[in-house]
Length: 163
Ligand code: PNS
Image 1 (tube, rainbow, N blue to C red):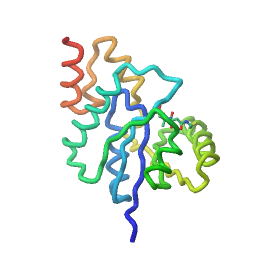
Image 2: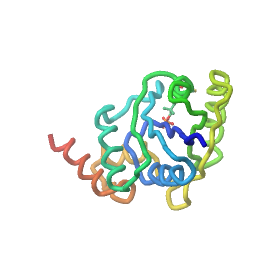
Image 3: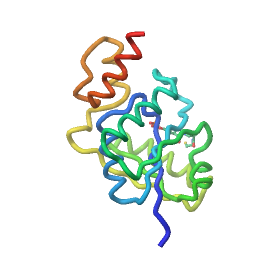
Image 4: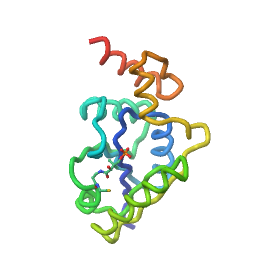
C-alpha cells in the first residue's frame, strides 16, 4: 500500500504546545507528516524562516518524532502538495472562529488542486487558549512563556534575544 503522507502547514511564529500536539496526533494517522512552514502574506513574522525551521528541528528531536519531515515554501500550499504527491492537509481548530478561516482556505486550496483533502484536528482543551500571537506579545513584554512552549524552545528564543 502507498505510504500516506500529510502536510501540516502553518507560520509557526513561534511553534507552541498546541502545534506540537497536532503533529503528534497527525503522526498517529499518517506514515509521514511534512511539517511545513508556509508563507502567510497577511503576516510579518517575528522570527526569521531559519529561526522557525530551527525551532521545528529542536521540537522534532525533543518529541522523538521519527516520521516528521520539516520543509518550507513561499508558494501555494496546494501546489506544494501536488509536488509532494500527497492529497492530505492537516490543520487544527481551536474554535468556531478558526473554522470560518480554515474552511475558506480549504475551499480555495481545493479549487487549485481538486483532489486535496483537508483534515481538521481539534485542539486539546488544555491548549485552546494558546496562540503564536499571544506568545509573541508575552515575549515582547518580557513575560514568561514556559506555559506555552517547551523549555528548549524557550532557551533558543533566549539566545536570539541575548544577542
Ligand atoms: O499559521 P497560519 O498563518 O494560519 O498558516 C497559514 C498558511 C501558511 C497555512 C497559509 O497562509 C498558506 O497556505 N499559505 C501558502 C499560500 C497559499 O497556498 N494560499 C492559498 C490558501 S488561502
